[in-house]
Length: 601
Image (cartoon, rainbow, N blue to C red; front, top):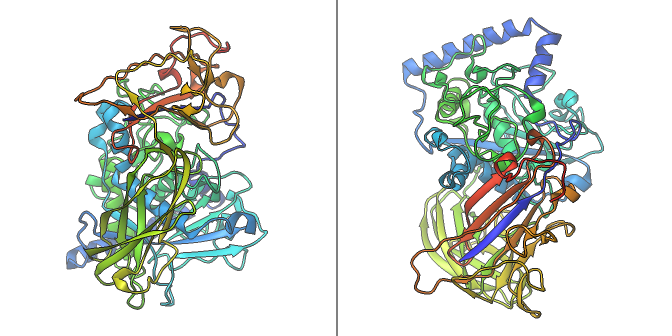
């Protein structure tokens, strides 16, 4: 077994000018202020669409909504300076859609729910929304595409000129048919806007065509390209796509406690099931709606426990604290698709215009990135997930593994995989000397032929191979002569992962419970959101059939708990580092062990 302790540094609130989480409601209110009569035009349009829905229902021409049946074709429009756009590989868009799919399926919540990270009362509300987002394979003109287009420009954008981002003639990129594609624009916003979206009814020249726009820094989860740990887990896009499917903010955009997040826009009714409000009351106090929250957290609107549903994707907290949509929100999304975005269900945009063979390498384990190498045992097997992104059944695929500059090792697997289906394969193992290594994995020769799309075939993982072991039971009191702790000067046993290469875990010069301690001295520096890992060596449990981990924690707040979200997480792996699961997470007031503030720890 391996254990990893992760400290997050976040002891001051982000300045208001640094981030603007979502501009959707501000833009909606701006449109109405500038033209109050537009609300009536929206109502009339909604009534037409509602009557069309009733007609489809009567004729039984609407498609039944079943799990996995709703495929949403997506096109990404990347606009910006060459220095911002050209460094983004196509792979980032593929990976971001996988994040979006996992978020809508509730899979992120699965990682956290079993270990008391948030109130267990919320677990029954976790939804698996039956949609699958896929990159478009056909342009509106019928040509083949990978669903990604780019424009290099010196033009800059803000929330106030978001309509120009959606127009080629005004410096951005035109939408593809908004009835057949979910259009996602990605740009650098000089007002630090993170995201903005249109509701089904938000038709206005001020905001431009239907779709979603996000900041390039929130695109994908690629720390090799950018290091923005507060917003690099994809929740910005999940939040904005929620708006696109008629979800309001969980806090109801009202400074008083409210349940307004299931309200109906005049003229745009939903089904009775879509009005099942299963989120607790909240209020909009943006100055405190940030941070990596854990445990019970309350704004005084809902009883605690369970407290605020801060982990809902329609909230405003850090990506690391947002885990799920609710079953009530699921009903609202599916009803919205059925009633007001039904043409997406019948779109052929995800079908290539001609037969194509495509073996898409979806993921691999162990998976380490630039900001967090994956500690693994020597000779750990690689597992890959392959998706058939082609038009015919995949009967074979080759998987190649290359470690550092070593010779590539290729294995050909016989498979039987229908289009849009996944399979997991075990490739060759990772082996090498103790220390850091880079592992390149790619697919090729699907059905012993040429792969039609090469940009989704390759994944790079960064690992740290561990060759030394500890034998259980063991104790580490951090009072030895070396840090990280060693058995001998030339034989490192512990491992520190420090993505910025600056402040990190250190031996403490204060005596807490014993004669030694390890500390993340966040009082002395402010690298907001940075995550630093302290990893044990592999632990050999021999014939033991169970284990107990004990550790002591001391934490003092820097100032008011509403503005302090320092955090500690403990993760474990029982398969040599191939997969990790969380066993402890506390942040902010949930982590503190004494109430005095403004004192160094």
